[in-house]
Length: 95
Image (cartoon, rainbow, N blue to C red; front, top):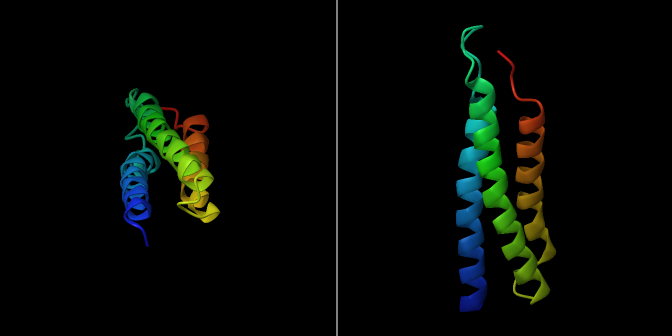
């Protein structure tokens, strides 16, 4: 494994971890009751932050795959996290 390949992989894993943190918070956030009016905004914010970070990871993945540094399966984590964050944004809980 080349140093450049390991560097790409390390950066992408870090971005996936940060995006995963945001998406996990979006998924685990629930309404505490009918008085909780901020839950929808919180969920959409966390999912949006996860989506933003994951789109950066997707751009990095595309660059690494197109240069031949990484294989195409590296798109799978990005696609999964983007899909989960989009679904959570659309189906955010309503108080």
